[in-house]
Length: 570
Image (cartoon, rainbow, N blue to C red):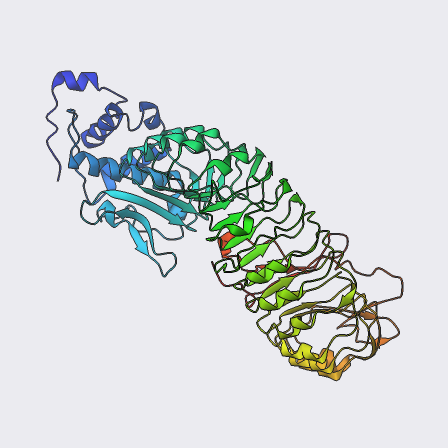
């Protein structure tokens, strides 16, 4: 397969580079071509441990495909493309410790470079090299959770036909090579869940065709560059889970954005008063856990395509917007918790009849929990606690929400009793009624909640004997009954619960074997499970719950993974 070099004496002199001794002409000519065409520098080959030298050495000596060496004469050729592509992919292999990859993806095999890939079950699909089936040009490279360790080589800039570059869940470190800016055909750049550092490059403005830009879960610092405004086609921007700071205001000028993920950074700034005029296309908006402030946009719920809205963990003030479309068919996930929102929950929230997840906990909301919420019959997760509502009974409509898996009304100033109708919520995995003024007994029908794993009834005024029906809750992991006036013996209950990890009762009032429970004396703080049980949901897992965490950080924490509690993916 070797091709005659057809080099003149003058050409050889002009392109003279580092000479390999020992008469290895094939290796020498390959190196000569790479240097002459600016693919790698002579310095890259001076150390035999560099990825460039290792790739060159493999091509010259060990590659069973025996790729042809293109001529040095100017002009692109198919042979030159194939040679450079194979060399670049070999450099990438060595630069990311290819011998330690979880799957070799046929790299460094005798197959054609376009066949260096492996197909996995959905949703992963083809990983490795992706080529256009007709042109046989490399249009994508994808590496998902394959233990790539190292840095991205600048030689990747030679893959000028690339439209797709992806590394997710690897250990790529260092900065993004500036040479990547020459890949002007790139439409998708995904470098998420790695160890990349530095700032978001200003040269990204050169990538005019960019539609999907993901840098999630790295260690980037600095601010969002103004150059992002030069990307007219940008549809998805994911900068979440980095160490970014400064104002995020410029993102509201990206008028084609549909998906924006900025959570878990240190951004400041506000959201425009009106969003629908400049950014009517939002489908997912996640700006949670930053330092954003000011009121929420008046037309926030007028974004008719919106499916996911997560602004929790900021310092937003003012009321929850009341202008909510009566026919909003798309919004399914709303997380407003851990802000400084005031006023009452608007009655118009009942118009969001497709909601599966609603969390307004830990704000300064007042007034009544609106009756109109009875229309939210698709709810799977409902968190209303940690607010200053007026004192009233548990809303009767809650007992008809038979799709609920998690219900938290912690610290919601609830009075009255728990109805026997609680047994109708038989899909509940979590029931949190902690820190209210509930009276009466624990209803016997609580034993119908056979899916229940987390039960928090502590810090109330509950009395009478604990019902024996609690024995039916065989999957229970976490049980808080302390700071009440309950009586009884939990010996039989404990023997039926193989999964019970934490349980607290009142000393001297409820007997419970030491190996099953801990007891609390009156006026004693014996645990700090006072945090709202909702956790930080993340877009990368489809906003599924990854674990339960009831610790406020003051005392012994409790957390547990759970594969059974999920929210339908977006």
